Image (cartoon, rainbow over all chains, first blue to last red; front, side):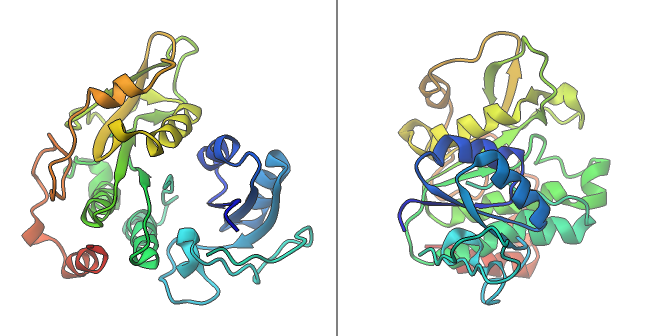
Length: 90
Length: 189
């Protein structure tokens, strides 16, 4: 899973970063708004999986962003129909 | 790389997102190695302005900076000016220290989101950018190709310091909320 870029918050700066460091990688997008993540996935092209997260969640909450850190992503809540797989990033 | 920020939500949003997002990541990292690039904001040491009194956004962003420094990991902290206010001929990067520009409007400096992203990415692989904290703005001229001289001209933060080199010492550690001090202890390596 070394070739995975986790982008939490799919805003303009995040997308600009992903365009620079996401080449050749799978890009996992997460955002409070799935519409934002889906729109960013359309732009980036190589993004495959969208989840809904909040940066404010404390670690230890299984379905939230305790996960933020990109240590463990739980793509089970709010996954896009376009997603083809679920990933655990360690 | 952290480029997050609360969008509304007042003081609670600032604490739970601007600060809490960094705390959560550092806690989740545990003992794992990581090179960190954190974006906060120009004027982050201004505690008395109307914006910070209403939102405490500066204070919480600054506390997130302190957490990163306390974590003992290599880092670069970038405090950008106002996003995308650049005129087409304002692309030349200027890195400042001391956080002296505190008007609270675009006269403090402007910078393109694209430029922030590029600089954050380059900082991660630059030894010259390690343990550096700086404000980032753009002025008249073309963007530099080589960022190493820009990073290299900066002073590093003092080892073990919670604050950036040259910052105004106006946030006494012993006056900080207990939960903030607890978080700092939790992420310290």
